[in-house]
Amino acid sequence: MVDISGVKPTDSSTVVDQHSSDKREEILIIRDKNSGRVLELSSGDIIGRSNKGSDIFMNLSNPKVISRIHCQVIYRDGKWYIKDLNSTNNTFLNSVKLTPNVDYQLNSGDSINLAGVIEFIVEI
Image (tube, rainbow, N blue to C red; front, side):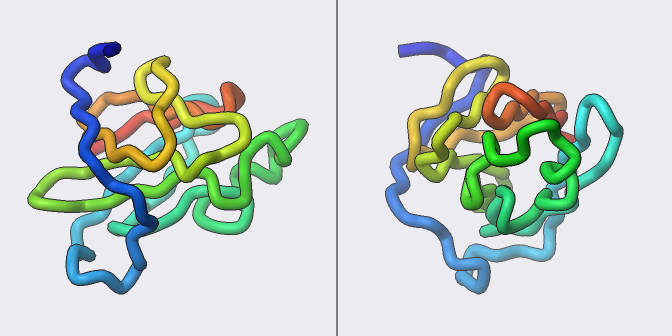
């Protein structure tokens, strides 16, 4: 098992509904490392070509490497988590490929890479 610098996977096999009872007013900010563009995310938000970040992904030379439904962020018990939603080209946290449908805790300064082509830095 690979240690992802303090990132702890937890069991989770379903997509969280954006209107779930775990949804909080807290906002997660991730910043595109190259352009500096910011995504403000709420618990349950899905990142992908058909969801949050679509305007950023359309500027990529090949936006289709990002899945329509790529990954999801969840706020639970005062902590943020990310989960790959079985994306075609994977989600990476601190350069380690995430196992689909498993929650991984996020920390400030973590690197989220989608499909090996776009990198975001977590700001908690």
